[in-house]
Length: 116
Image (cartoon, rainbow, N blue to C red; front, top):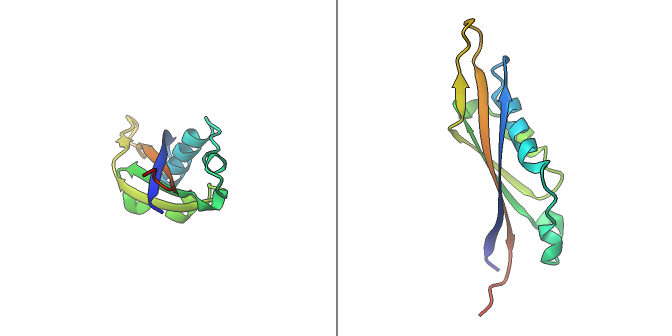
């Protein structure tokens, strides 16, 4: 069966002073997830573990994101975290670490049959 994207959610998170790209990404994922309760797998008669979840994380330093920690937020599904260039580092007037802003796009797909 072909895999079809059924849902996309967006979120934003930040690390105010610690320059922690992973924490900003985790907060962005929670922002996207904690605002809904969509039971896609049940709608299609599938198990939650069958969901294919792609998490694109936009930050200024993609290499600084611990993808395994971000994936660990999800209680089920097959999770693929993809850090990419994006987000925003906001300089601080006091010369300290910039505020890190991460954006995420979470896509959920299932293998579903197409109608002829």
